[in-house]
Image 1 (cartoon, rainbow, N blue to C red):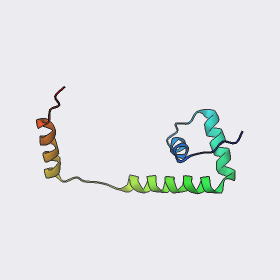
Image 2: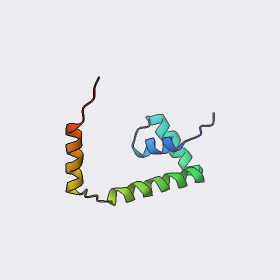
Image 3: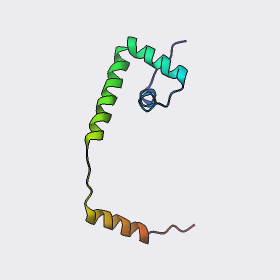
Length: 76
């Protein structure tokens, strides 16, 4: 049976969410499937780039969000 791997499978592999058999199958496919390997490499590059981003939200904005969330109530 031929298994087609999806973008979701690539992310599951990166985040170590595949079972042992799926992991082995995926790694074998990475060795022979150029398109899958390119997709995997692209995802890893993007994730590593995102990890480098250091966001510092504006304190005033955070205060407004906190204030709003305190005043917000849901009627059930």
